[in-house]
Length: 142
Image 1: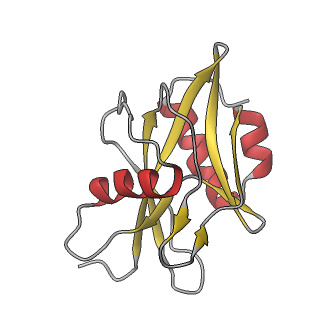
Image 2: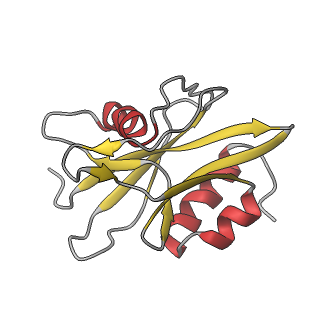
């Protein structure tokens, strides 16, 4: 049994004009990948898919790298652990819909950004996820 709350999400990538880009979402001053709490009885992978759709409306994801994942160390006041998978979104527009719980979108903006820019925008926790994803994608990180 896990002692820490688990959130699950996806590092979403897309090739834009031949360049690999990462989808980052901003809530307040923090940039992160789409993710959210795994609900009771829910499998983390299913939660990751649900969260991407709820937060971005993207549904056409290709898990070309399988279901390997990266988990962060516990963070924040609730010592949450975040699990991330990697998927390509070859098409589809990102839309930030209103959250039924909040009555507004969970995120203020999004961007498809190259690795270096994503790394500069991200917190150290998200940087570790980004570096893992870059290694999984077989790209140089610097």
